[in-house]
Image (cartoon, rainbow, N blue to C red):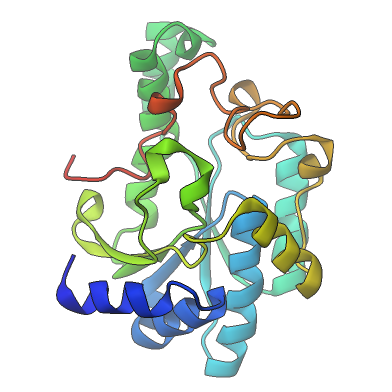
Length: 241
């Protein structure tokens, strides 16, 4: 991380999410991309980016990775978000040859047989589309929170993303607890995904995401058959690929 980004990360640590978002949109404009899985964290970002963007005269660019296995509720909700916030919603789908090869190799549910096979699925359906989503970007903005999992415990509000060519990565909610995120959403009238009300504390692909039982952590419903230390799809690597 450069000295400038390190200083900014510390300065924005306890600020509302709109502060880091404003910095990113002022500095990078439409060269910044906002990742949106439509979780409560990500719709907070879209809500705030729409507000800040209107003040700055910048229309935020938001992207969704349509893996081909999203819940129907997610697709319907995506349209509500697009209409409510009037943002550019760029959709990136996996390349058909990659998916066809994957299905030929491991079938429809091979990702449940091993971490390696699951990561192959994530690579085809998420990581490769992410590379296209970030092509030409100078920064991307994510809803990562340190509390979400052991694999995210060191996320900075602003950092250099070595996994994606050294572009700037901004995570305005890095220091938020889940309770703080929901409090912010309720106080500010943020649209929230209907699956959250059904016990889904994380939003992902339908075959890989379930509702979370009382007492489980927020990411327990993602790839629930795996050890928590493996629960990343590859979108948020911590070093060069």
